[in-house]
Image 1 (tube, helix red, strand yellow):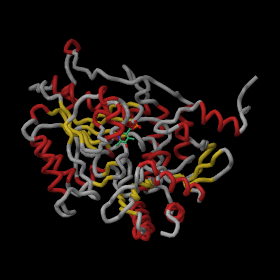
Image 2: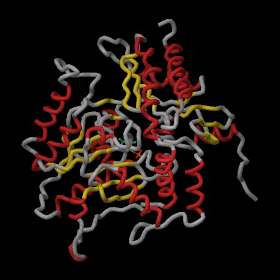
Image 3: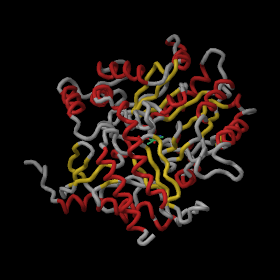
Image 4: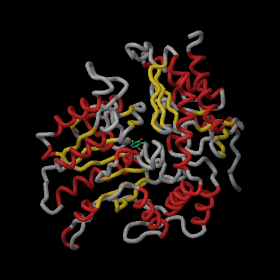
Length: 455
Ligand SMILES: *Cc1c(COP(=O)(O)O)cnc(C)c1O
């Protein structure tokens, strides 16, 4: 006898509310939303309701759900083998994916270490950087400190939270964390006094330079999200900041770790955000979009210099002392390969500029609303910040949960989006079509008009 499908929808909602523990969610207030299936850019819940996936199932899905190419690749792989360890061996599919990743990522990142989620890819990068300085030719074992930006987000494992500068995540776990040197938050919306958009890059870079210069001999690596700090609320960096950070880290012999977990795979309009400023970091973390949003997989890419420092004789113990059970899983690798195929077959990057422009044009009318403080967009990453008062950029009191309320209204218009505080986040699949962009923005407009009636 099977117990399959014996739960009613009411049972499902009850179990979801009382037994499933959702991340970053106040379970006392949680309203079940249970998805049965997906098709293209749409989700269907157990009640049959159709919802536009305005957040790409949390920034992962690139080409839509139930995509025939990716489905077929996963099925084909399943018919061969579902899992192979990467300790001492590997599945063929992961090797193929490695070749392709080396090709599509910035120049010089020729080595790929697999893990299963973004946080783990950051942990691996931190430990690689640390071990690198201990054992490279001309070792610098005193280089043990990390620099992270203000309001940074690099995942929820202990190393990631140590780097993180989103205050309420960070302070709670303070006693568990290691110290980092905190750089500026290169925010182009909330500028420090006497800083203008024209001087913002100089200002933030100078602050950064002062921080690292002098103690650079102790610094193992600078870790940053290139161009856009997603989880902080779509904070957009001034143009040129990344390039200058790269140049300085090179000059001072500090490693640069770019966390492209959110920005990677076309999100910002190029395959990787680093490519907007012709930057090749020493280490790069990728995850969310790596499998097109189908299966969990992450990777840390490394330069030749880092890789070479881990080569040696068996008795030297130079191998990387870190590894995950499901590293290089063949099913996830098959999805990753198929996603890269879809990029080519559907000319995904080539089609992005028109979509990015259309989204920008659709959003423009919202800017005049008295509670829309800022509309920030880079590619298909958008933050619409709601503020109490526009001129002073005064936020609403946090307890008013304005962002969540607007997103709740959008649901009534058949659009699923998820805010970051009072920043409404739009992160649609790269496969979104013009009419769906209009539906998405219209739902936000409706949500804002419902939340602020008569304004
Ligand atoms: C989401 C995210 C992470 C964490 O990835 P997980 O897969 O959730 O562990 C790390 N860095 C950035 C920039 C992210 O957006």
